[in-house]
Structure formats: C-alpha cells, structure tokens
Amino acid sequence: MVFIDKDIYEAVKNSLPSVNEYVSSHGGEITLLGVKNGVVYIELTGACKGCAMSLMTTKMVVQKKLRILIHPELNVINNDGSPENRVPNDIYAEELTEEEISFMNKDSLFDKVKDFLHI
Image (cartoon, rainbow, N blue to C red):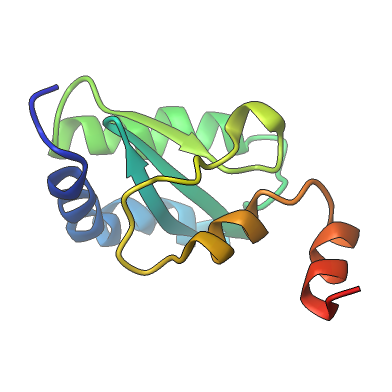
C-alpha cells in the first residue's frame, strides 16, 4: 500500500459514519484506535463488544466496506483483548495517547480497574 498511516487514518475516520450504520443497527459502535503500517485498529463497543460474531463483523462488514471505500488491501483488526489483536504502542492516532493505548491493551477488566485506581 502506498499511503502513509496518517492518510489512511483520515480516510477511515471520514468513512466510519457510513460503515458504522450496520454496527449501530445491532446496538454497537466502532471506535477508531489508530493505524500502523497500513493496518487499521478498531474497537467494537456496545452490544458488539465481546459478541461471538465480532470477528465476522470486523472482517465481513467493517473491513469489506473500508476496502471498497479506501483501498482493496486494507486490513482491519478489532482490539478484542486477545494478545494477537493488541494495539501497537506506536500507532498513528490523533485522539489517543500512549497511556490510553496501554490501558486498552490490559488483559482483563481487573487490570484496567487496578490501573485506573493506581493500585
């Protein structure tokens, strides 16, 4: 892919409202976390978070639509808490700090609460 991460990020950010229509019709939302080496990292929230069909939603809805709108080789990963889908620390993202990215990569809700409470 010949685009830089910033360009992909902007294109995805502008395309998310049309992609989000399907997800929101099922009670969920898509949060754009960032882009690294042409890979788009998202988080499905609401009713879609933790849903057994979230992988299918990510690949067959979100990725498919973004490939049509932006680039046919675009890959999308849902940050679902599994180690293989962790968000890299050095992604391009306008809204997220490294601390927020680190927080999203915590393994469990307990780890997130401990981090939030600083214990």
